[in-house]
Image 1 (cartoon, rainbow, N blue to C red):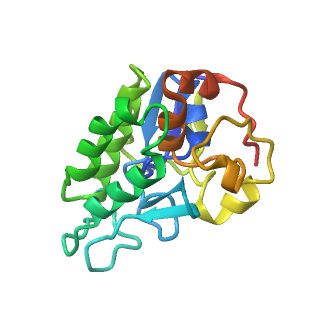
Image 2 (cartoon, rainbow, N blue to C red; image 1 turned 45 degrees about the vertical axis):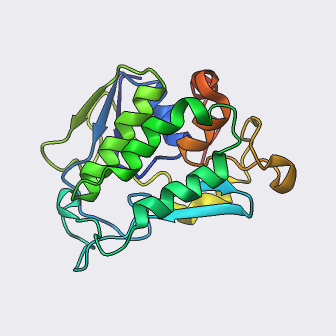
Image 3 (cartoon, rainbow, N blue to C red; image 1 turned 30 degrees about the vertical axis):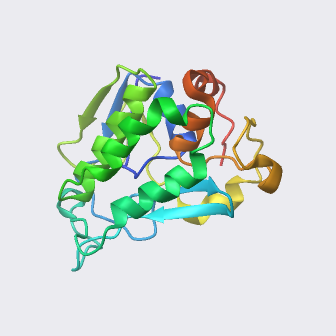
Length: 212
C-alpha cells in the first residue's frame, strides 16, 4: 500500500492509523464539505468513568456543508484547557504519559483559527511521536472515488459505528482503566501512544483486524 485517501479527523482512531502505518503517503481530502456527527471534530478516549468523547466546539454559523478548510473553531470558552484536563485525568498514570505529554499538550493548547489547521497540527504531532517520516498531501480537487493506487478509507470510521466496532476482535494492550472497564478497542491514537509508547508501532503494523 502506498497512498491512503482519508478525511482529516480530530486525533484519529487507531484503525485509521493502522492504514496510515502501511502507507507511504497520507492524502487528505481537502475539498470536501464538513459533515456533522463525524470524527472530524470528535474523538474517543478512556477515562476513570469509562468511554469519554471529546468534541471540538465550532464557531457559530452554518458549518454543515461548508468547505472543510473554512470551518472555524469556537473562541467562546476555554475548551482547550478542559480537553487537556480530561486527557491528563485519563492518561496521567499511563506508562508513557511523562514522555509525550509536553508535545501533546502544546498541540492541544495551541489554537489555530480553523478546525483543519488544528487537526492537521495534531496529526503531525502524532506522526512525530511515532517517529514517522511520511508524506502528507492535500487533494487539489474532490475525489468522488479513489484513483488507481489509492486506498480510500473516507467514511470508514465514525462515532456512530463505534459500538459496532467493539464487536470485532481487537488485539488488546494494557490500558489505564482496563481492570475497571475491560479493554476498549479503536480509541483515539492518544490511548495507544500513552499506553504503549514506542511499541505502538508494532501494534499498528500488525494485520488490520478492524474489518467492518
